[in-house]
Length: 203
Ligand SMILES: [Ca+2]
Ligand SMILES: [Ca+2]
Ligand SMILES: [Ca+2]
Image (cartoon, rainbow, N blue to C red):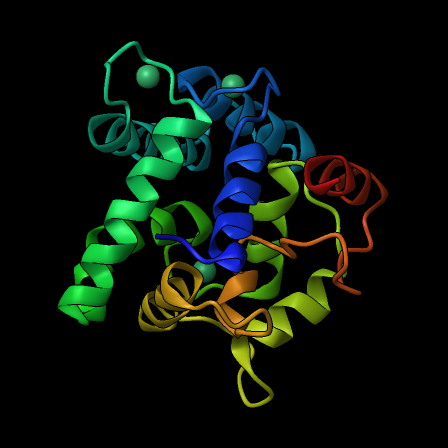
């Protein structure tokens, strides 16, 4: 069973990834994400960077569709999402092996590491979250993820942070923040839009 903190995190992520805000996750949400990203960062649709972004985003969609869309109607409901996350989290805890997350991490990391240099910096992280419609104190959130001694995140950091996102029920765990502040009570949840959205979500 998911703890209250885990349920909040997964519900938050579901609502964020439903970019068209119609109550489910489908392929269109990922295409909207790519369009948002391209328009926010002046990415030309004919550029290799755009191709990489689109193929990473659609690869993510294909993966989650295969795993989570139980009735294969090409739409993932919150119920399907939470059922999968419950099962997957239990499996992770049972195996107790962070490497089990590796294929998901590669998919996610490829999407965030826009210049493909094997490290994610603050600007790449900011662009990743902003295209999902998230506004926050990106620098403070990123610092929480990197810790005080580093300015970038490696694939291995992503594995560890994602592990915490999935398995930790500690509301202050750094990994909780990998997709931005997940609770309206968090002081880093400064963005007006997301704060309103989260307040609506949890009240
Ligand atoms: Ca949707
Ligand atoms: Ca479905
Ligand atoms: Ca990079």
